Amino acid sequence: MRGLRLRIDLHVHTVYSRDSLIEIEDLVPRCRAEGLDGLAVTDHGTLEGGWRAAERCREIVVIPGMEVETPSGHILALNVERPVEEGLSFVEAVERIHELGGLAVVAHPISLLRPLLDVDVLRASRPDALEVVNAASFPHSWMARINRALAMKLGLPMTGGSDAHIPQAIGRAYTVIDSDSRSVSDILEAVREGRTEALGGGITLRERLLKVLKMRRPLRVYFTFPSIW
Image (tube, rainbow, N blue to C red):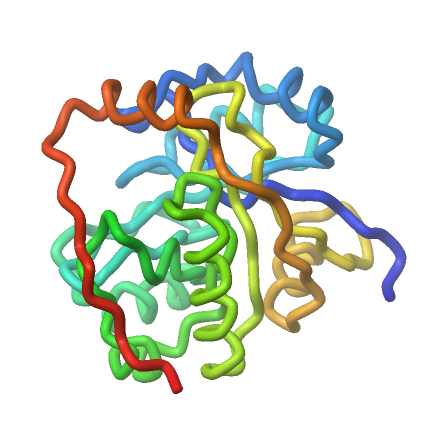
């Protein structure tokens, strides 16, 4: 164990994502209410929310980031120097995140609500960690078990995040990180080295419905899962 055990929600969306209701002003009070030391702002396709949160929420740890969408799956780009451009393959996106000095975490790698993520693509891309606990995943416990097994199979560090799009979901899932300090660089180095524990539960049915209504897009369900053994 290192000097600090920090509770960080590594997957939060703000109003800078088109499908979130979370204002920058919500972040500090929600972290305090949930006993979090901080969070990562991972808006879809933009760093604006993360940068603004880092400027205005100095009472907590804020890791600026963005969620990158590729045809093969989503990646959390944490602490990149500038936005990751669109149109990249999964492997190219991970490479680009590393070129920009960031940490690449595979978001919700296996989910009923998203297309199948190819395990061979995962291996080839060499991400830094896998999000194994995602509060928005359904059914939550089942998805968490499958994703933990996948992370163990690939030998990757495990993270947790709420994937919050409404304020009350912040902190529902999170990562405990054994870090040398509260600096973003030390925290991300701890994640890279696997000094993490992914914890938390799922969002409620009411919160799930609020998220779906806010997203205002067709709900698709995918029933296929890769063989990870």
